[in-house]
Length: 375
View 1: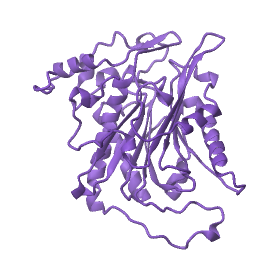
View 2: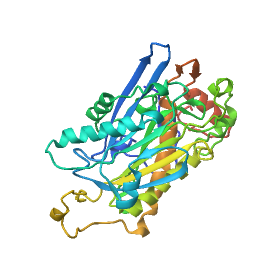
View 3: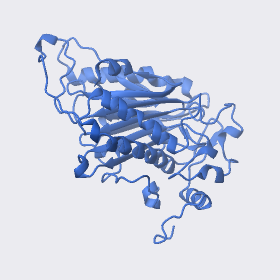
């Protein structure tokens, strides 16, 4: 396996990660991927897929959780966000895919949910699907993500370590002119601060090479751009492909607090040198599972209780969660880049970020490293 940032003794911020340093450190959260690879009859390369994040084991429509969203830059698309803004409820898994597969993934998630219920009830569902553009490496207009791929991602969803890099929805993504894709990280607060965990998962497909920062150091300006795919591509703008972020926590946050947590993904993105491109859609969602019995949005509303007892984090203690979200997103983006392998598609080659290349750039930018580790 390729090294992650912490394997290289690169530290981000002041908080400690969970045992997996992944979004699955939040109890109950599961992640599944399905890769879609191949070549069309016309010689076009297929390099795409779908990634699914499940907030809890079992049906999310039956066991929803509170959620909030934030859009830093709206040059992107998503489904299901208006219901979250209105009701504060996440009632479906969250899926990442490519721009032109947004609709089929949404519809497939509805079908999967109906198969899980299979009780004949009148029911509606508005799944959350987020996208980034992989049209440089992938035959994006071929619509190669199918319902069976979404079903496979759902079936494969597991807790435990998360595969990163060019996998699932991140298969054809580019980040800071290197290969990008799926990345994850987490932070766990000390017991005196609540002991909660915040996990982040990103689909990183954004950024300009010379603006890349790692642990605050401007490494991008020390990396040659001769291998950038945008030097010869017809696309005029490096960094035009967007980033989507999912934040998860087991803290008992209410919907408006989840929206505040989602905003902090912007800070993690900024710490790595992203978030400044007009042509990048930067859309973030955060959900909280700390309230265990959030009532579903029942069609038969007369059966719903009149009131419910809920918990919430006192705002005087929410700053630590904001910091955790910022640091987790920052590290997840770099983990995505380090995990991704060099990829080729449709006449374009995108280099993976080699660990030694990154370490060399860090040293040139003044990073002291760890004298005891030899790095």
